[in-house]
Length: 471
Image 1 (cartoon, rainbow, N blue to C red):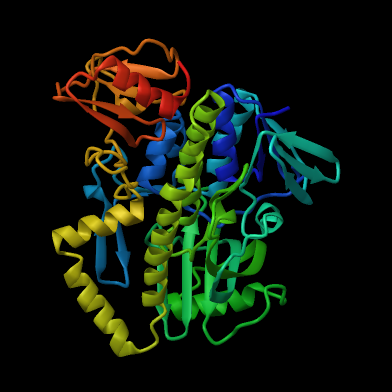
Image 2: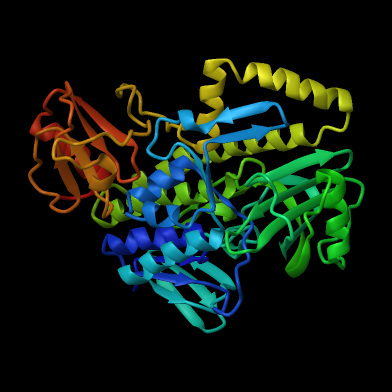
């Protein structure tokens, strides 16, 4: 019987499945697409924290090479400039690359790690008992110790759990198209709103461009007919030109929702990515949040498989649900500011926003939220203030970096004390700059424990048993 079934082979599911398989778990990945259906993606932005997550898996440089551009500066509402170049990260920018590039590198890794990917396997029912979880598909029954639903907005897994998905539609009848342009826009990401129209253009890097267009006054069903002339007209009104748009290879309508499941875990079943939360496209945070969900859950499932207390799995809800709420707030604020109708309010938005964002503390908070670098998890009572914070990619005494040492899903103990056991799961590394503390870094790059000086063997063993499983 497999250890884990993952439902949905988008970025979140592929990262999670790859993490589990690299750690030795038997993983079945069920995907409703049959392999011939293209996943024409909406995501273009890969933020700094996501690149750090991929760096800890040896994938960041490969994905970085697919980027159309690296934006170290982003402009909101014309006058609000966000300087991502100030991020305290190896990746102080937003990488513009199509979601299918992210999926490709994650799929290759998952396959190499031994994940059993089953195409054309639409899950129709999920049942669980004290011993495991069963997923029904038209092709047969699959059973495992745990199941994770990463199957998107219309999650069958979430419905099977009977969980609500409260929230609302923020934008209706958004139009998407992949097109050719006769003239390249002057900026990598072109976005503007005028009157009741809004348009966004981003490059795939291969001669195709993704266009998003919206008319506030035209709300029609998602399945209403759509032609390129309608998209051209809205783009011209919003941007002043349609850049010679022609030869659409794909067009569609969709609506943008803000929703979040109240629980990310029910027994042996978990939700992650868009199955757990969906946001407006503002800020490009959706796919990134899902990937970070996967990075958080993967090591915990592995640890419990290795004998850690089952209660460790409850921390997935405790840590990731508040982050999902915050992403909803941030992206929601951006989209509502972008949707202001009044010319006076739009002018004030630029004036006030441009002034406030120049306050250093405000700017640090904003870029920390957008990039996810600034998010932290709650620390248990009495723990050091660093517990739950993202650990920077510090240099190590042997000339390597922390995030290189994390590869393979390992914990890294920054100090000089080698624990008795946990071979292959805990890597001991001396930081390049000596410290007065010993820090245990979790596989997802967050601080798990801080010891004053050299830890007592019993205290270290207790911590590792709780977080990494039996020695």
